[in-house]
Image (cartoon, rainbow, N blue to C red; front, side, top):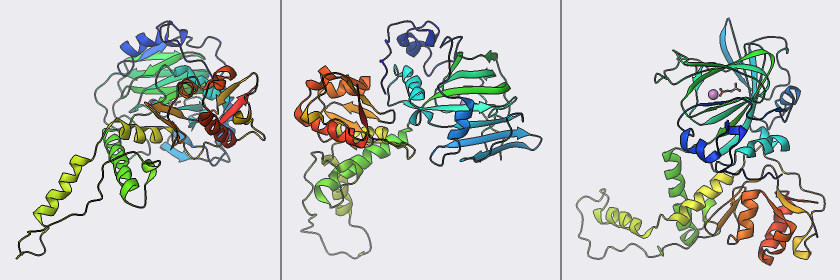
Length: 398
Ligand code: SIN
Ligand code: CO
């Protein structure tokens, strides 16, 4: 599965004639943008029926939201049976369709002018007349692309984001829209975090595709960094290296045992000795919370896959070590997440046991590498790529 990296200096219909650079400067995380015919003649990658079928699968995350006289209802999939296609006011939302369908993954990757570290998934919703998730806000950016039928989007820049208490989903208590647009297939609405919005299906054949992003909280980042540092210490001095300690990063020598020669006799034996508290704090000055440790956590965490990502290795993948095919290209599977930082390379939640070489970085950025470029890789890298081919993380395309 491959797709060219978007040219960030080229005006594109996808962003209403802006270049990706201009969009990132003026809109990203700042203000909504409505784009008419972002993808002219857009044909969604899957049908409404395909979305229903996906929602039957155990490993696929889906939700059914209905509303009516009895208020809002939320159910989690899998769904063996859905309400009739002619019954109004329901919507089915299926998460991470990009993991299950190549064309959906390729569509999502048109947005790779934003880092893979931020790009999350392609969610697809289908709705009957009046269906939607209600007026709400999200904590992350989203591109809402109309795939089929029509949807009325009302949005608001309001500051009051209080919610109706006691509901199974987030519904704004007092939604005051300041924009109101009907989106047709190929039209797209970008919303920054916390923009209030309400999308209501017009007709029974509404499909909306959401290109979603992930945002770590500072707490998540801090915890991850400390965990990676802890794993680094464990890898050198304790038996269990932990997730981020393998392979071991060079770290401080902390093998020395605590000493307390000269400690006076105590009248308060239950009190923790001040010297021990101080010695504990002093070890911190030996721990380096540096770029390598941060990258170790981020790389493994951001490339780790949800359980629903399944690989289907070729029966007899080529062995690159033994000889690179004359033509063709190496491609990443649609589910594969490959990232790098300085010398570290991360794939599907693991750190690769070798240093990044330029060809490997190109493979990660382009999600593909031509045969001629594969030929330039070191034997160690080729041996590793062979393992990834066996796993089905990579494929050879003729
Ligand atoms: C949708 O109904 O497809 C989009 C849900 C949302 O507004 O987040
Ligand atoms: Co939303």
